[in-house]
Amino acid sequence: MSFPSKITHIACIGAGYVGGPTMAVIAQQCPHIKVNVVDINPQRIAAWNDEDLLKLPVYEPGLPEVVAEARGRNLFFSTDVEGAIREAQMIFISVNTPTKTYGVGKGMAADLKFVELCARQIAETANSDKIIVEKSTLPVRTAESIRRILEAYDTPYRFRVLSNPEFLAEGTAITDLLEADRVLIGSEDDELGKVAEQALADIYAHWIPRERILTTRLWSSELSKLTANAFLAQRVSSINAISALCERTGADVDEVARAIGMDSRIGPKFLKSSVGFGGSCFQKDILNLVYLCRHFNLPEVADYWEQVVKLNDYQKHRFAKQIIDTLFNTVSGKKIAFLGWAFKKDTNDTRESAAIYVADELLHDRAEIHVYDPRVTAEQIYADLEYLQHHRRPVAGSPDSCPSSEPLTPEEIRELVKVHPHPTAATDKAHAIAILTEWDEFKTYDWSTIYNHMLKPAFVFDGRNILDQNMMKEIGFVYRGIGKGV
Image (cartoon, rainbow, N blue to C red):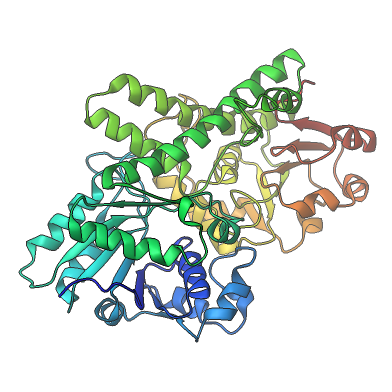
């Protein structure tokens, strides 16, 4: 047996932020391929199958339309992992790879237990040759580990592992998939590896020009993903470092960013200063890179990249401290309205959101936080804060970036944090407003009315620099932006 020249059946293990949208686009663009997306979480699968497309577990502009076109035709969601493995010729692994919270590499290395479980389940279930595609963000040489697990099983079937990292930005994932800058495929350097590589390239070629489909060695592909995210995060931390200097000198960080961004060698992208980057990839991938560098005895390289995360931690801490300092050195018993909880607009993803860490620091000073986010549920907000109490990252933070007091109990969190379905209730009689997510709707609010219903002096801390500073001051607000000299 061997791999077919034309793939007609695909399985994807993992129906999260990467697996779901990626497979939906493949199914839409390749109606001749049956795509089975499987997950062990029945609630998640039920949400993918819900007739109400607004209840999809992943909020992503354009995703409901793509799912509506392909679901039931050649796109299917189920919990039948073994059945999907048996039917598929090509299997994507798109499971979570969080940073380890225990043992060797705690706080830095990727936890690959879910990937390993997938490899073992594939080896135990396979009834034919299979192409395995790494879609999760993984450290270098994970493909080799998967291959060794597969080969350890006494089976007559052959496997080839490909690395196909995703380069999606949440909020624009569908556009990123349909109009990708590049598709990267890493393969083993043998005949079957090249056959597998070509089979995957042929799938993407249905809508991506061939010149944008890049092929490399496995290890180069894996490292390229970590490096891409590290470089992007580095730019964010770089401009955030300058924002702190701008506030002390009276400069405007947006003016600085515009000036340097016009240099063609630098360019304007990822030079927007903010309260800090979040999401599932940037911090995790940089810490993974740091761990790899230390593992291979490259301490200077590790220290360099770790500083990017330290600066991001510092920016969140600096924002929280500015709120406390400006509100007369205490926020105890004061109502602080949080506009936004997701790590960025146009997503309901809250992983590593700056809002979680800013809220936590204010809660340890006993602030009363009232949250409004158009897409994030109250259950998720409470879960984020409760998780942080016992899973603080032990590295890459400034000495005073994490509160030293005892963890808050779930009861204390629910007493101090209220989540509202409308911004009016969140901001009514508030001492201050903190903007943590750059949702477009925040720009359109009647800020004069909001001002009239707040306690005076009324403070706005714009962690995303989305409001007009002069307008807010004319209304009467005490306005503090990121990198804006007072």
